[in-house]
Image 1 (cartoon, one colour):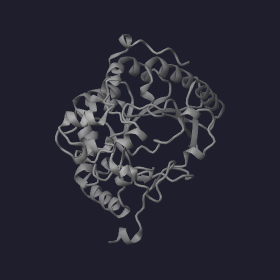
Image 2 (cartoon, rainbow, N blue to C red; image 1 turned 30 degrees about the horizontal axis):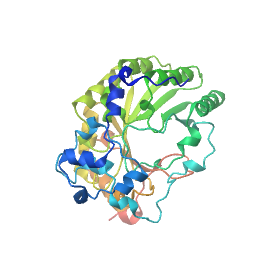
Image 3 (tube, rainbow, N blue to C red; image 1 turned 180 degrees about the horizontal axis):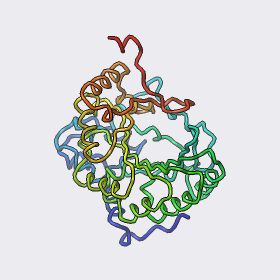
Image 4 (tube, helix red, strand yellow; image 1 turned 90 degrees about the vertical axis):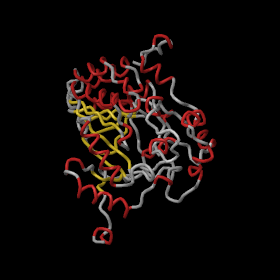
Length: 342
């Protein structure tokens, strides 16, 4: 099922663009006219969790702005080295699940198929930054996961995840979709991906053809945290997805210094909707080690949600949720009574 890697010169444009991604934070900062010490760069943090940012997405970072909301999402910061109680390696309890090959099932009726541990961009708050992909990703694990899906009629929705499933080439992804197309009890296939945003050229004609021909409904959940991430190329890629009949949703994470103000969140929802994407979830931070500097307090989160409801139409207000290990679903955030009435 997993085929050969093409020679560099044979790779499609998006593959060549991915290979040119920034891998050295100092080089990126130099291109932006920023001093490493002034922005709090920590080279040791970059060694622990490697730095990677596509040039297409990095081009949206404002030069000479140490507080840019995109830069903050990917910058290996000195605060990552702080040990903070309550922040650990497995914030949502995935590493304690009993996987069936590459298949993880946390909720009834739907299951997660991990296709790869690779991403096109390394977000510093990633809740899977310490996930043991080597134990659950690969040809044999994938086959076992697909067999488990076919054998379990209770699963009616499969989520292709990782890493990022769209890091795989069209041929490999097509083979996975072909296997899923043969499962009669599946109703939906969902892809969770950053690539249409961070590398819009990944939305190829062949990828759209694969999705359009899938017998199950295809849902693409992108991950955008700030309106600045959406440019003309991203809008065009998302428009091509819509034209192929793909349902588009967004999940964001509430992040200190990125989008923890009502203006930023409102602009994100408006910009997403204009691009044909429905705001879906706004996650409270999954407390993975090294991400405490992104945490937004519960009272602040409740205040921001109230502000959004006061100024936006209901369909533009994403559901504020948290993920709790062992819970039957994402858990809607309900502020403590003292916060709700204050």
